[in-house]
Image (cartoon, rainbow, N blue to C red):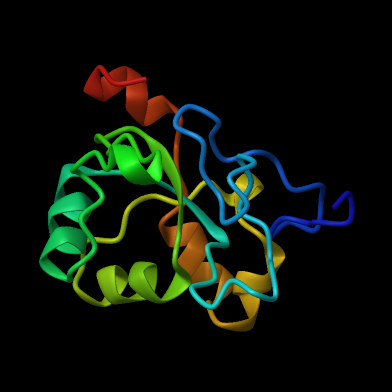
Amino acid sequence: MPDDRNVYGTELEPCCTDPMTGFLRDGCCRRVDSDRGRHELCAVMTEEFLRFSRAQGNDLLTPQPALEFPGLEPGDRWCLCLARWLEAEAADCAPPVVLEATHEAVLRDVDPDLLRDHEYDAGDDADSGTV
């Protein structure tokens, strides 16, 4: 899938391999026709978003060993369902977005300025003590 591009139109960078993310569990937020959830947006988890997602019926906090899902913690990167990120944005709790690892397909549904408003800044990690 070397033709995968990010929102900048450059090569799609991996979102995360520890924990392994992406619809294909290859670390990338690729556009996959069979992925009805559109796991195309790479986000950095926050406590607020994880609580919001659990309240919406998608518990990303609790490990699910049978599904090889370790559970997520604040600071983890994860390929999110586009619709869930948009719900969180409307509820004012959208997690930051790693634009280099977010597939260009999200631009069909999300204004680029909105994505830039939520752009992840690695400098925030130094301030918060997370990696």
